[in-house]
Image (cartoon, rainbow, N blue to C red; front, side):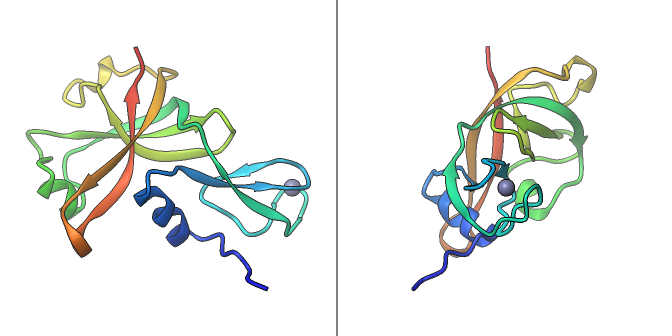
Length: 139
Ligand SMILES: [Zn+2]
């Protein structure tokens, strides 16, 4: 009998295959991201992977001028800041990700509550390849 592991490592494996997955409690249908092996609502161990829509709304954000090295390699710095936000997904969980299609240099123009949809971000090659969550502003 093989037991599935509901870990962030598994989450990123799915993400590299362009699947945006969370875990869903089979007892009470609560959805979790980051994935969890145990439901905090009803304490059930009966979880399964579920594909998420990637749709959500912006809850909060911040402009980042000094980020991790893979972000500076991707061209972001003090002169070209990027925006990171918390997104409330349609399915319930909140995740952080890069917010695209907004003006990070003028954060006062970015509105809380704007509808967003997932765009999986990649930079680099082979073992150095980084995958992270981006969210595009929906028109
Ligand atoms: Zn549950």
